[in-house]
Image 1 (cartoon, one colour):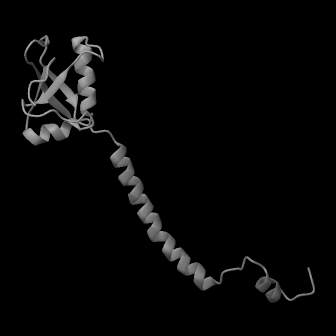
Image 2 (tube, rainbow, N blue to C red):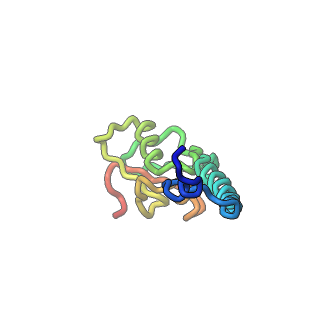
Image 3 (cartoon, one colour):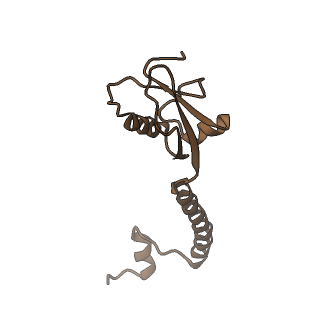
Length: 137
């Protein structure tokens, strides 16, 4: 120890000791943040949980597209429409270079990143028309 008094050493050091009143205030601030962290963690886990609800999809061939043996399928609603496209290509044994156009309820062609459940909610039922040439727009 040097010849300085303890209070002089504390004043010259870059790290100072907190007094008891600031420790108590800091403890009060920690508790709400812990509660916020818990609810935030619960929110993150609930968002990460995969939706297992199923949507009934009916595939309908248009024009010269091959007809599926089974036209009704149950698909997980949280999947993107891209998985439906890939599934149909696999069922029809189509390559990536083969043209395939999909339409919802004979009206529009959704984006591949659209969620299947959102398409189902928009119309109440999901009929996917597919063809090898552009049919609507």
